[in-house]
Image 1 (cartoon, rainbow, N blue to C red):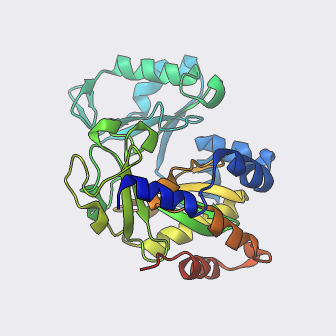
Image 2 (image 1 turned 90 degrees about the vertical axis):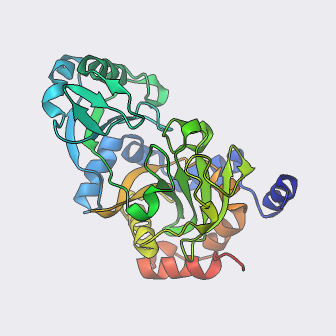
Image 3 (image 1 turned 180 degrees about the vertical axis):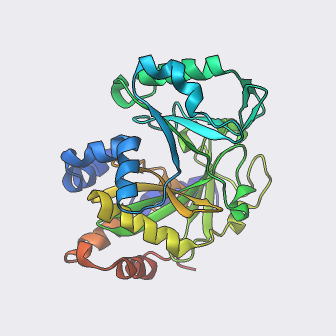
Length: 318
């Protein structure tokens, strides 16, 4: 299928635009009082732990510039870790360290970084350089995700994550985001990462894009993206559904990873999830959202019933 035909099909399938998303779904189904729960990753992590939802281990938190000089005491000396802003978005400010060698810290691309540079990065996070709206922020230090080996080869210098849109507790669309050299190891599509649309019924790839163009092979690893099949798919959907129960937002983006030890693990939640998931899937969100809106009190359905509904009504037509 040509790119022109693909876009024509996407528009004809019920593409959800930014204005309609904001007015008809975000504003209508997401009470603003709940936004702080998901806009602050530290708050989300604490809530997840209360609900026994799997998240990366919390190593430490730095909340004030006066604490920056004490950063070293939080940093593991024998394994990698991740430093991230609590209020960051779009992957900005996330710094991954995969190893420590002779007082130097090793990034995924092999570059070395000193403690002083880490302290400067933390200071920038606290000053709000990466936060939503530029407000003062907190720094989270957490353990690294160890990606399930079945998925690791699909990504380049970064953790592949799975975005699920959950509407009124029902998973309506999913994609996998794969880091590549062009995205500098980040899994954000607007930074050049690869998006793979996922069949909600099976966890199998149905479409792949990079920079809004159809592709079939990962640009760096050479993996056939259309052969991608996510293991433990139903467990991931169960976790996505439980995040709706946990935070109460009706229109929600849930970012998950498949950790080799922890299994399905929550990375973060988003109250205003982006719309590129439709491009990755080659189909619009509107018909699926309307299908859920026709239900009476879907929030009262069990998790198994919600997943069964999604897999019955939103499965890829083959």
